[in-house]
Length: 204
Image (cartoon, rainbow, N blue to C red; front, top):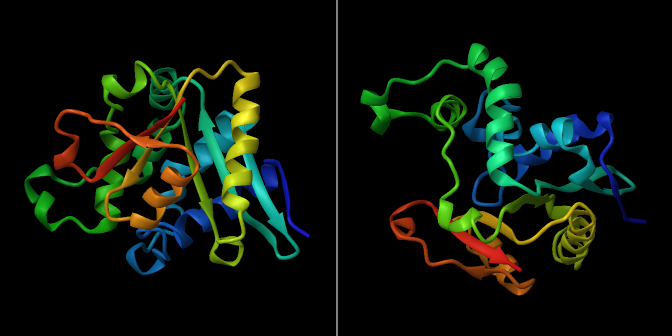
């Protein structure tokens, strides 16, 4: 039996594990990171800790197998992370030297994101201020759960005054881009975005 429910504090370790297991173009990223929590520090845990009212999980007989987390106001969220989340992590992870960027490991790239988090383009957040991250383990993929999980998350978000949602997908993750399109997201035409690794997509 598979269920979708609000996140609990005891789920946070599972969110870290899922972030790693789906962190390489949708597949397992454990071979890229010595620190298994680094991905989750960026894409999952802060939402469960700071914005639990917009964090839900998929649970089957083996435990938590997926999550959807997000916020209704990306700009406020970015500012909040700067106050309440990044400072503690910056003490733990060294800021890699910019002069050696071409030699950075995947861990160093993530550490740089912690020290120098990118702001979402204004052209995205002006019309689509909310955003989410969603990940499912392979054992529950392909069963329609992704659509159900998004619909459930969106229903929670609507209760909190959502106005428009965006996601940022890795350009190399064709499966994820296809999924977002399937459930109604459309790619945004953002100046200079074509040069980057992120495909910005939105849903009214």
